[in-house]
Image (tube, rainbow, N blue to C red; front, side, top):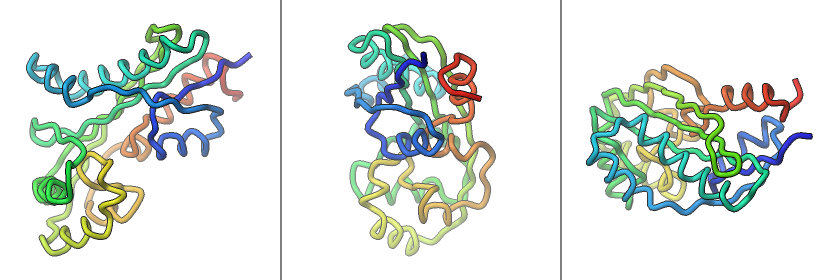
Length: 199
């Protein structure tokens, strides 16, 4: 019998992706001091990939330790711009500053997913997407932030590709679901392989 999946996140878009794909699940937010963990890992010269993977595992483990027998999915996404990791903007001014730094340049999104069972990781994947932003004007970026602040305040890089943010980009190399924060195709393949999803 398929085991219940718990998404260790309060991310609406990740929950929606799972629901749209027909994956039964519940959600349970895992409280982790992400900025403190990032700072510690950066001090150890960890790669952006390892930082995303570590944070995803920490979230999955935290919920998995409390829910024996369940499979718990932890996720995290980091944005790497020329070796600098951008976090969720602290305010609208920070959002504008991030977008100004990203415009007319390339950056990389890394979306990590880790599944834990009984407190131990059993599967992991880090999806990588490379994006290039148009050389958009300050005026457009200011208006964009003002119009979309309530939505983009929770997004690394201060944009959402599934919304008006798509207009900012000239090129995207990689998987759309990974941009949204979950390497969904790889996850679905794993769940089907273990018999938790019919195929």
